Image (cartoon, rainbow, N blue to C red; front, top):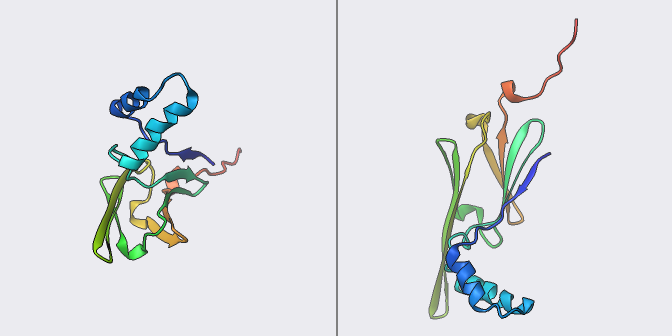
Length: 143
């Protein structure tokens, strides 16, 4: 089984901001990272974490979506690109909050695109992508 954990890209603006607070003290460098997280101005910070893995018969994409209902998820497969997006608005007292994200991943070669399915459980969305029969390993007998 192959497992790929997504690492968020760090832009040049973020690393420059972090260097501003790096005074040779390791803990000071973390201040810039905390500010980036707090301000959430970087591309990718509003993307859900994703794990990509496979077994003998399927590829899987697992997205962490805490607090998101399955009715608020838009999942689309087009031209071998799987796109996950969501928009939700919350009104509490006099303030309103709007949260949105979008995440796209390329579907591996050899996926049966007609049989792709998705299931949501405990804030984890798992997209199951069955492999085509021709791509599955098979035993060959020697004569």
